[in-house]
Image 1: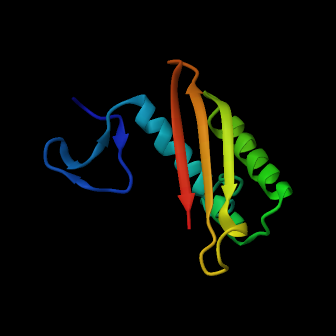
Image 2: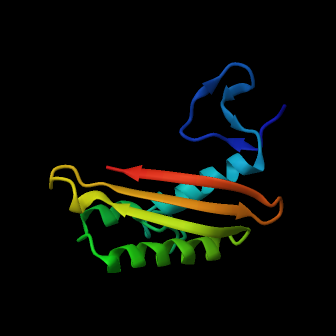
Length: 128
């Protein structure tokens, strides 16, 4: 079976060639969504608006406004760059309030559907 795209991070795969591959549209979509969320705006050359910048939220105060801002950023970025995804639910847990200053954390769980295939999936990102 051939692949659709290279799986990131890069890893060798002796069965299919030099690199491991994403073999389904569902895998490609999940990988692309993860990269959209983790990319900091301005980091991508030629498209400085790309990215939700979740990593930057680690160093912000844990407030209800922060969670609302993260939710809004995610929905805006997905609507712009991945309109074939329908977000069903976003759960944000900012562990900074319960952790020490040395170990803040952020957890984002997104439940979504791929419109063309009607497949549901879940992306869980934890940043520490």
